Length: 275
Image 1 (cartoon, rainbow, N blue to C red):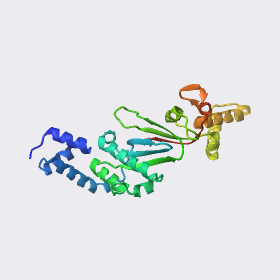
Image 2 (cartoon, helix red, strand yellow):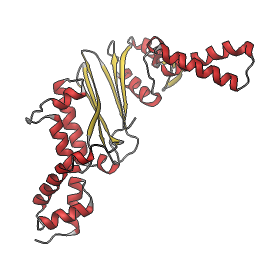
Image 3 (cartoon, rainbow, N blue to C red):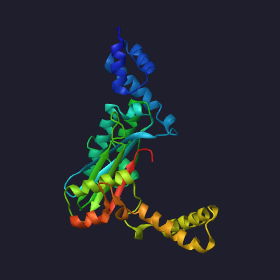
Image 4 (cartoon, rainbow, N blue to C red):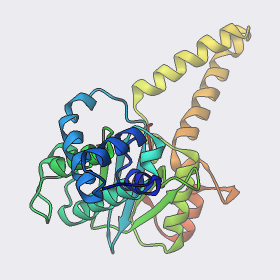
């Protein structure tokens, strides 16, 4: 059975396999499209272990909120070609649906859990790995239960799925403010909710760097202490969410926005693909 260039293109779009692999599969399948897909899947499964050491710096962040419950998942792959493909994004949403149903907040336990189709998450990922011809892995996930949740997903490129995702756990529902705060976190990447959450060793390391920098700059000895503490204070404000200037109104801090809305941030999760 003969096949055309359009058949090769169709097979490549469906599987994300290389053009040469698609041609070989169609040759072996004597032009039968469905058989060619099976051939690619079988050969892909044989190569799963060979891909274990490859880097997965591309992918997608998917998230969903239902009532006082939110989940988010980062699924990684090797190339942006696969990341922008329908099959990869369908796989990400299948896994997200299972996360929403299972509420499992541990990656290892999540991979071992059984989906509605009777297969484990890991086996479903392995099948995707085989079909797409790349290493596919769940890098991390987040689950927020029994609390209002703000959500924001951001595309860094129009032809790619969201690369940045944020879930914000709020003390009280505040309508659009939850999304606004999530959007702020996506843009400014705070590391902690407030200054009390910043680890002491991180502050001490920043103090050491500030001192070394000040001395290198030739600052007078008498002024060193004040300069160092000023820089440390600036660092703490920079990494603390509620002390940052709000993205949509730089005249106010995030804390002021939250206070006006009658709520507070209890915790947040920010995922960026590959970081």
